[in-house]
Length: 186
Image (cartoon, rainbow, N blue to C red):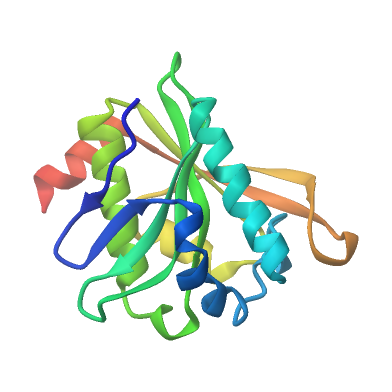
């Protein structure tokens, strides 16, 4: 599977490489992403490990990670990825997304997700995209609902996050036919 850049009018998603570390470290220092998820990017070493593991998953066919480039600002603002890729059943997750605080709430994340959904359904031919979100992360849950995600259920205490807390994960899904119907409507 060729891992290449994705692009729309607002953002460019570049395949994540260790070269992105210097652009991402200043952003990582502003975030506390492991509050709701298992990832910890709180030190340079931990961010390098995060990037290295994401790159390793590409070679195993499990993930396609990206650095998010904000076109208007002409700078990288975070990361996202296709993960938990099931090539046989044509289901994957979109997640591992973190963006700079000054980009949050600007609509840029919706641009990223729209680009990724379009690529997953229309280019890669997947039949379903899933999102797993901490039940407490209301902002992210509302954002996924706004782009068409349907709450399918809640996995109780399925993941350990910051301070050893066991989180509940809300499982959202978008089916290809729902995406295509939505695109026909717009």
